[in-house]
Length: 140
Image (cartoon, rainbow, N blue to C red):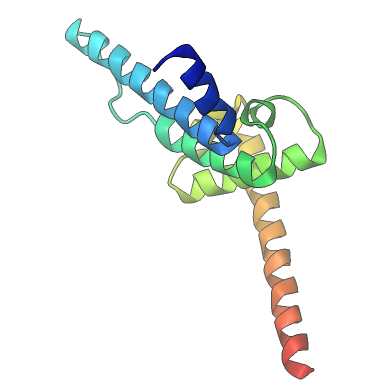
């Protein structure tokens, strides 16, 4: 693809599409590195959680309208914290451990556990609000 066509494609690419493309590029590079390391006789984990964490985090960031790099950063702005904690919860439900999630976000596993609890509480409150709205709509 020529340079101008590549630029045109990237201009119409959504943020989520770009994040997913970058995740795919990182997976390809990681696979290449693992292949090189394996051929050199080094022990490497074959089932690294990079793919799942990248995809989940990119989707949650896109849902919340925040940049993935900023969501993974140190900011404590409420919107970023909420997005980050939702990502913790989704990753946890996907089977990743607090240690794996913490490694991805550069946070302590206890911070991950706290974030998961906060995200669960928010999800439960939202569920209760929906149930109340449904009941009120049915009573009208």
